[in-house]
Length: 390
Image (cartoon, helix red, strand yellow):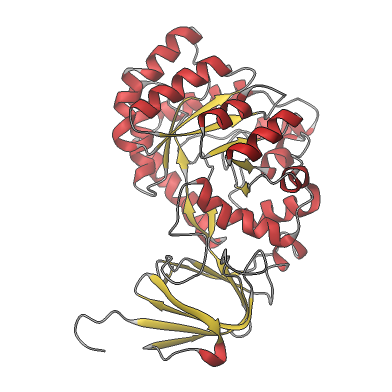
């Protein structure tokens, strides 16, 4: 290898390679008995192992399946404290309500930056071991100018996909009107240097559609792209607002009218479903089959947070989506990879085709189907990020 030449790695003897190539005849762009060549941080070639070009190094996949790294487009990792007691209460019949967020807010405000970053580091490592290579991280447990800005600064240590969620709930000691002014004024100004996205919890007990519109509009004027929590706890205007504003994604989408589904289809806004939430709150699962059959683009994400869903496992979410939401194994894997990337406006991840980043997962299984077929089993044999195992 000459000076300045980028090292190449051939991963061969792949039993099944999921490429997510949009030009393929099948949803996942599956190649059997496959190989992939990585140069530097990117995919250089994919195809049948018998046709593979030479490379500087070779890795034998031993018949394992290889899939793109999971893209988790919805998480809340910057927090302190624990809400296990709240979970236990829900399991005995106490309904979930958004107000529990305030418990985490108090603990997060009391934590040091070092404590917060250490906790995020542990959760990101936990995600990586389960195949997640790209993660979005929201603020939303600070709810003061200082604490929202520092939460985003902590999140930015781990990902470029940081989301300002000052509009999570209205904190104690203020009115909704006063707090919206803060969220769209000084708090937005402090958060903007650390954030790529802006989000609102548009829901009963949080913010209504008019307040959400004002917050998202202010964010757009500040250069932040919009996304939205909506229709988690009941029917509402949030999903149609997301479609009207052309947001990249609207998340939860549990309670949908026919008009909501039509709006999602016509706008192209991605419906990000979060089945770990329903598992953890005993609420009805979203109807993914209805959305897919209507032509809506659907992503899956973890919504890892201490209150309504403390799982970091996208393999679990895939299994739940297949078992409870009407998705096929192929649709669920596609939703947790390719669609997750689209939900973050990312064209560099979510697929294994030449030019994309070499973020991939080797499964201790011959097929992607095993992610749903063997729920709860740690099937991730290795996770590669940017062309390197890690």
